[in-house]
Length: 446
Image (tube, rainbow, N blue to C red; front, side, top):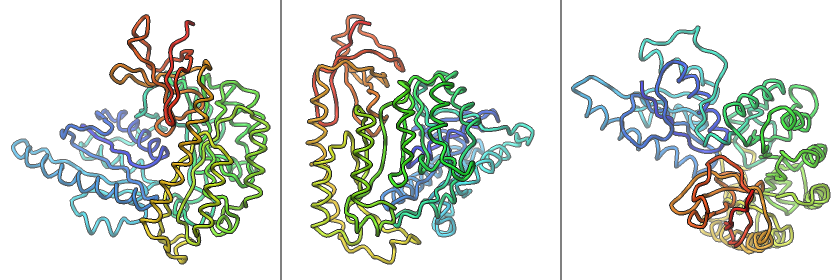
């Protein structure tokens, strides 16, 4: 069978899809990711249910695939082939009954803990399924072969007022250190050079399984045993941040000096309302400590605007914070009320137009900061990992940039003596020009 997997949402969903793809490959199916050609026998849509825009994208994708299924079935009336359309993931976990009533054309619906059932469903439709062939997951990467996400835990024990993830994914479940180290070694043996550490909250890692936080120990073992050239830390949580992690990062050159730490806001009253477990004073102290221990660290954050109770005064406070904190990278999204969350009773008093104005204003402040911070890199020589080629440019990243969300380094192919770089390899690059979201550079002779 030809199976197309369409993945929406975050990198955690990406890993789930890759695990399913690995099992399907072992069942002798041909697996594609986001295939554009309408020729597959099975289409699996891994949905996102995090915020309103993500939900709408998932619904729109399912509707588009329903139409594609109808066209496929019409075109194959003569040979009897009929497509199976399967919806999985976070949106299904929350709204299975409503969705199945509205979209009867979808053949199967599976939540976030039913990955083996999906494999069984696909394989039984070909009479090829045998239980003895189901093994531990062996992933099929949908990312470029030189980097991969390493999901260290499932679920979340935080109670952030705006977030539905604990309702969808359940309680935090850490994966054992030995299992993660083995998976990392296998990924590196298969050509992965960069490991991106992810979970709903990486700093909580170990509390449920070992009775204490063990992210620092995990990073230590990955740094010394995996063989990865770069290890990158995502989705840390500011409250009770495990400071011993910074010491491990300082000691090991293959752990990128990069921390993704979504702060969401700076106003203490709003942080309490958001149930973030930290206030303005604690946030500022944490940023100061991180930069003292890791002077060359790249800090990425994410902020929310338009949360209930955010007046213009609190928003201006947030803008001032962004100017003063001078984050290297930043994202921002407008608050979206979610059913069943603690914030739902607060309503949605800030209208959508005002939210979007605030997003634009805040990002304009950050763009100026980003421009200035990037200009400080001009003249420096940095290690750059080449991700791809587009036209006359090779596109890569420094250790200060994560794929798809951060800045990129553009290298003019026409100025290369050999006119060719290898995708997935590291090169020394001197930065020659800086833009607010991109850098330009030239290869330095090795």
